[in-house]
Image (cartoon, rainbow, N blue to C red; front, side):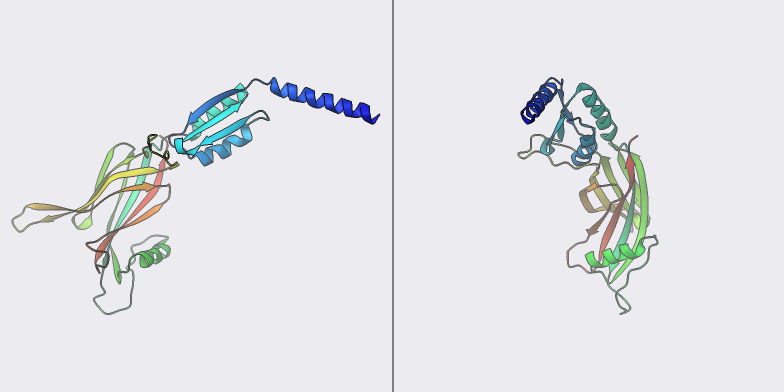
Length: 245
């Protein structure tokens, strides 16, 4: 009886293996231009059948999926939905000025009004050792990726940049990192326009840099003549929103 049962189990196992081998599968390579490989792979994994597999290529921003045709088609629809360009953006820029205390009082940070003021103030104190920090002004910018943007801030300060999706380079020696859902502010420039005694305007570039931002992320950037200077400017760049068109 035991031998007959063992023979039956062996036949059933061979039949199951043969049936699995007979399942038609297809392989498709998906290139991700905007979405994070880690996020997409977590979403794709539960969709795979017992015959399916997935291979990640982080350095090339690609995912290879092998499974039944109908499963691969569903995966393709999911990736198409997730891998969308962040078409629009809205960014707020606060401009602060750090300076030495003039009244001999203890260190303080001049409030500039926001719900998370306390957290922001503590970060400012830890990053920039100015005794006094006051708000010069702010600007909110929004638009389409791939276009340039510019805005004036009080006291003659101006900012400009080009917002775009991060660029990839497959020719890098170790491949390109996966930036995920981010936008890049290229050629970010802070200038100050002053009026000379003769009435002519003079424009001075105070900062020129590039930035990579995630949604809801704040970046603190200092602009000063020297690291140990007791005066300088601080930019708080807040990526308030960006998403699909």
